[in-house]
Length: 137
Image (tube, rainbow, N blue to C red; front, side):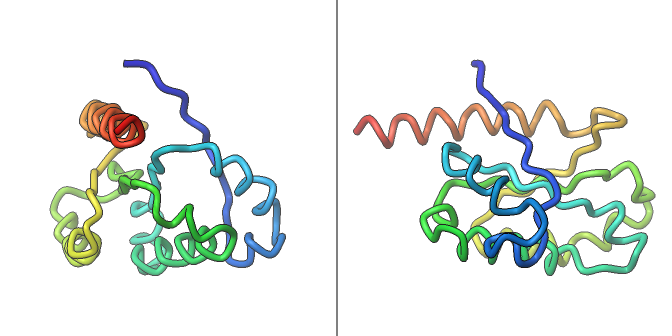
């Protein structure tokens, strides 16, 4: 299965109101059928920031920009997992659990090592197939 991925970098709070380049990037999301939301947990934990707050801030921007975007199917990828030592990965459990309780599928990935990439790509393709089937019904 082939699909196109659009990288929408650098969304910040206020993007839906034009802060930064956010509104220009948000326009590109309107064409997507599935959102894969990357949460940089490696940096977040190093900087002692709450990954769930980072996630929620971007979700709020999507909703503020165009509420239907918040209804699209979504997968969450905890990125830069290679920056989190194996013995500290349990710190991610509360964030993962909170998202799973919201019905969100969560993957841990690393672009540097390739960890989790195949699983995320396979699930993304499967979700795209599901969305296409629902649209055709």
